[in-house]
Image 1 (cartoon, rainbow, N blue to C red):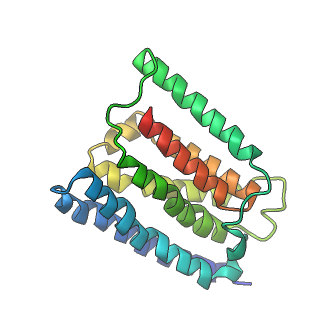
Image 2: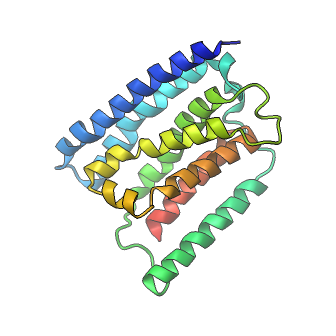
Amino acid sequence: MPTEQSKRRVLIFYLILFFAAWTSCDLLLVPRLAGLSRTALILVRDVGLKALIWLFPALLLIRRYDGWLAVPRRDLFRAPRSWRLCGEILAAFALCLILGSLIRNRGFSLSPSFVPADLIWILFVGLMEETVFRGWLLNLLLEPGDLDGEKLPWKPVALTSVLFLLIHFPLWYRTGALAANLTSGAFLSILVLSLVFSLAFLRSRSLVIPIVLHSAWDLLVTVL
């Protein structure tokens, strides 16, 4: 088993490279792509660049440090034994967002900004982000026995949630939404969602339910 120092060294090194690469991409490269169509920009940023910076390194690290992980690589993408948890959370998501839409719009209506091209990034975002934050980071931070205990491992879940929040800052800064999201408290929804996805991962010991929940939430938020 790895020592705490070894895990900490790998984690810090990865986080420095990951945050530096994605922040540079979002703040320096993406603005230069402003002339692209919305579909092309989605394909470049949310599929191509995200796969290059998020997905592929995480998959390589999961393979390299498989013996350090609480949930082994072979189990990460297996189908859950029960979909009940997924269904309950999806129902809560739908109820919350539909009620919010009814209150906000004084009636039910679909978002006029939604376009079919949005389905492209929605399809991939859950896979990429959950592989990094639940399949790799949370999985690495969990201690032996955390999956078997009745108590929630708050420290790794909290740290993962804070990191998940921070990775949204470059996008918010580039789009001018950072100050508004911080002062309005909208950032809290990211922390809550990360907690939900982490709990789903801990309960199911698989990435399948977190990926489905993540993509479903983004679809509902985009459509409503």
